[in-house]
Amino acid sequence: MNWFELFEDAGLSEREARSLVILSSSKELKASELAKELGTNRLDAYNSLSRLTEIGLVSVTADRPMRFSCSSLPVLFKRLLNEQRERIERTSKAFDSIMSGATSDYEDSTEEATEDTNAKFAVLKGREHIHKRIGEFAAQAEERLVLLLGRFGILHLCRSVGLEEVNLAAERGVIVTVLAQLDRRTVRFYDQLHESIAVRHSDEVNSLGVLQDTGNVIQFLHVEENPVGRGRDDAALVVNSEVFASSHSDFVNAIWNKAIDIEAAKKRFTEERIVDPLRLTVGQGSFLEQFRMALKVSEDLPEDDVPFNPESFLASSSEINQARAALQDGRMSSLHELGIDLGTMLRQVGQRIGEELSFSLRKIEGHVEFLNELMDWWEHAGLGELDYNADPFFHIIVNLAHPATDDDDILPLWQLDDGIIEGALLARYPENGNVRIRREAEGKDAWRYTLIFIDESDVDLLE
Image (tube, rainbow, N blue to C red; front, side, top):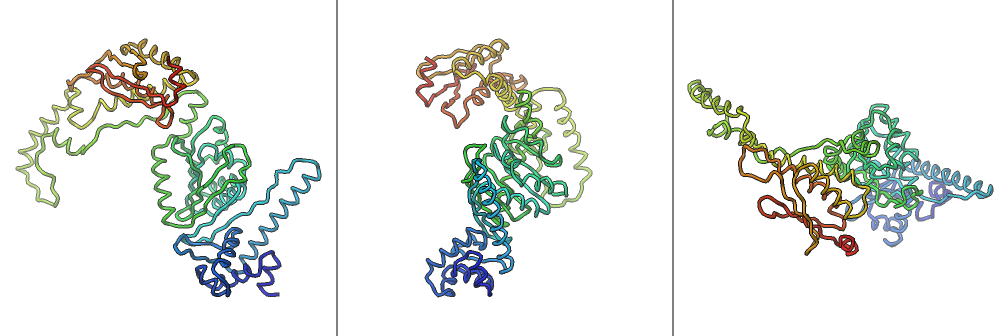
């Protein structure tokens, strides 16, 4: 029996078997080139390649035109046998379940595969097969493994074979990190991860995927909306490309640096408090330039090595020391001279206070009830007075107890007070919701926040 007959006996068509034999002896072929070798047209060659790619025996490059390749024939045949054994085992279990009167959850699904070469991709179908490949990624990882789990990905991982392999990778020294969007219903599942795995929360993490070392990526294309479903229609793309993996890594790093440690994020659900670290914007522009101006150093910075001049150094040191000493008199304006923007910082602190206040009022469903509680708290705290009106749109007028001033030596507490209202409204009504918030000055000592309700039924609730 030759290879053609062996693959045909394993369930492949004659053209599919011949395609594998031809591809195994070639580095890469276009569909037209394979069609010429097979003595058929390009459409028939594409059909065979599509089927072989679907069952994981052939890989395709992301180039145009696409090029196809495969492993050696013994490797392909073993892979085909393993797939058939697994399918027979699943079918056997489903049959036993039916015969015993139980409801079968069996569904025939085909696992895709891809070769470990650059610029190759393949499609995985079905959550079971996707997480099996995640497990393989973890088992083969050498240095780094990053998991993007979205909102419910941890639930799917813990119900799959992939969890054990991810934990084993962490135990043998692979740096495993997890970016997720925590949810009250799934936060407990993170305890099943190995203690060395770093986990952070970010509201920006909606997608699911895996990054292995420097060249392999799994990117989910479709996930069943029901978080506890079986995910039979889930689909993912497996990409083997250093360029793609590098871009994916940059994306992950950008979110990771802004994400919140899981222990702090958990407190939102376990203690119902927001204790996330608050990152403040200190100022903007060149701080070196601000510092030079504060010290009254007018000379340009040297671009080349210049000889040391003791006389020039001594002549300038007295003036510099005097300017430096003047910064220590405790004035607010000294901070401004150094480029530190207290107004921006206090507004951000106020926005965080407002966010926490909105979080504490999150169980209040009605708009009027929420706004009344918010305004009552703000006025009770002695921050000023609030007025609201529904003409022409519903709006809140913030009359500040500590109005704005142009004096740089006065602490701009009005930024803090006004920031509380701004932060509470933005937290309650995010940008992607059905309420738009417009902020504008109402004279020197007040601000107007206009709430524009896109859903007319919401407007009715305010009248």
